[in-house]
Image (cartoon, rainbow, N blue to C red):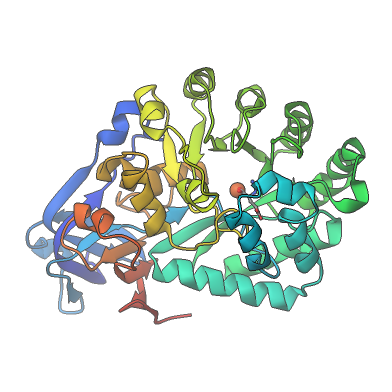
Length: 423
Ligand code: NIG
Ligand code: FE
């Protein structure tokens, strides 16, 4: 078959191995790194990836050849846990945070997530659409081609619906592909203060069926945390979501360990999120149940905590992990997945191969897009992120700057010289 275009002369190409399931334990150390390689594209899909000069059988006079001498390429990066759709911002709480007021105390006083709920309720569809598109642009120029994004700053049906509609619209309008998650159980809204059971009834009886009916989300997520939702309440929501056909996630062991990992195993979640304070037992449970750990070291960093999720130990115990931004206005205001990957190395002692497996193939499994993205297997979408670096180590060692120079989405050049070139 003849390629439409062939990207040639890469110094290194990182090729994750799609084993038909997320890479767990020692398999996270496996990948092929092609030295001096090429990527051939046909109809927006991967036609071939190989070493040296591309085979003549892929070329004719119409094949475009693009030179990437000295560059490093990976499958498009996947940010598999974000809270992208929100109104306002929270720098007004920054001084409190710097003075040591804990995250959950700010929330208990009506700030934090509830602060963002006020601004999100007040924001129109257009406003939210524009703001979220801006964040997606930022992610794209940092090398991300697929994201997961949650609702959860409405906590009333109108606003939750608006957030999810924004995501649905942007999935069509924006270059980045989006998987949507309904997270009505993100906090207890002021109008339900001390009536959390009634709020859960509302989520189960009214919101979840409506999200399903309007096909607004594929996943359901819950914040299982002290002062937010108990393990029992989280289980109620997730069980109801499961019965309606949603796939499940759970924010577990982020600040306090209150049983979220047990809930994840009981309901059969696809992933458990954060896991900063997970116990040995929790690691064993998730490992045994093949639940992916979505780890968010940027949140630990931004909350100024010293305990990072024990990523190394999780891998030793056979878990599959991903790294992801958590991009949100409170606990992790960043859209730069590269920085999160660098934290994965510097603060969690992950190896570069583990880090790239985490944000490509494992993240693809986490968002259930493994059939189409996450590796350079022939026939998958030609989503390609190209770094201004000659090798994998450099991209993690030189931190907190944008090293991504080009991005291809479905075989089309969409970012060049750190700028979006196509909308
Ligand atoms: O994943 N933990 C709950 N939700 C987000 C934070 C949201 C916010 O602070 O606005 C998180 O950390
Ligand atoms: Fe989160």
